[in-house]
Length: 402
Image (cartoon, rainbow, N blue to C red; front, top):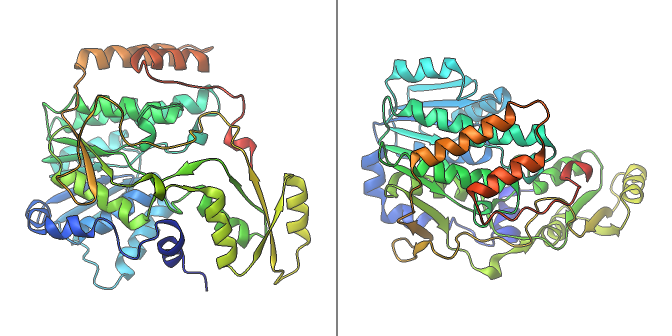
């Protein structure tokens, strides 16, 4: 039987225990003090990282947990998982709501609760494939930035003691609009540091997270379909458990305006193709490599049960927004690598004035209000806000590939 957790430990992150356990143990008393008996609201809590954050924070026994997510089935599974896990603490006041955090209903909930001690926002368009056309780009910017700013304005009515919003390594020197939107998000939330404590984290790919390419391999095998992966894109990886823990540590232990990232070295970067090789071997097969999608699909369709050869297609990345390597910080950012065992911290972030943020958002809204706005217009206005944004249009997106 395929054990995903064991596979990730053995072949992806290559460690049997979380790299953040030592930091959690070293700061256990402070975490307990800041979380136990406190109220918590998690936006996007049904996703891979949000649900992992919930499991990490429940260990310290908050008094209340409110979870918001648009994925109704995801919320059902989250609840079943929490209720079915041995020794899992679930507060008496545990409620889930299927709605958008920008929904007026959430505003009513927030005001009725008079805010929360801890607020963590994981609602995000996180995939590079979010960049397809002008409508998909508008949707990701609306979610990652515009609605997120309105959410922050709401929080000022009852400021939380700890506010965390997840970022991505792709926000460092962004080359795609998703990464740029998260860099914009970083600058935006830092403008609120005078109103309440704000922290964020840039981290690696979460191994086999919902909707990720490796997660898709499991679905492909179940449906007897070929596996596909780029062989020239290197990525850092953390386990699902680790993804929630880094967010917990950043949220609770971070100082106002800091950005956290995992201490991972270049030797820990892997290609998707190398992980796919290990996955094929682990399920008891040998890869049969194809160069053409149709040939691989035909072979898969004709496979008999128990066939030891499994079709794979490896390719060079040729889609808009793919970055060949990953980085967690850029020149000019003040880095502290000594405070934590497994975490680096970007300190003393330069804050952009709120009027500059507002002007940029007005420019975005102006573009979106036009019926004939273009992707190029959006890219140019982002470049005006992030001069280092290097967007390369290749005219091909991930929805056009297996």
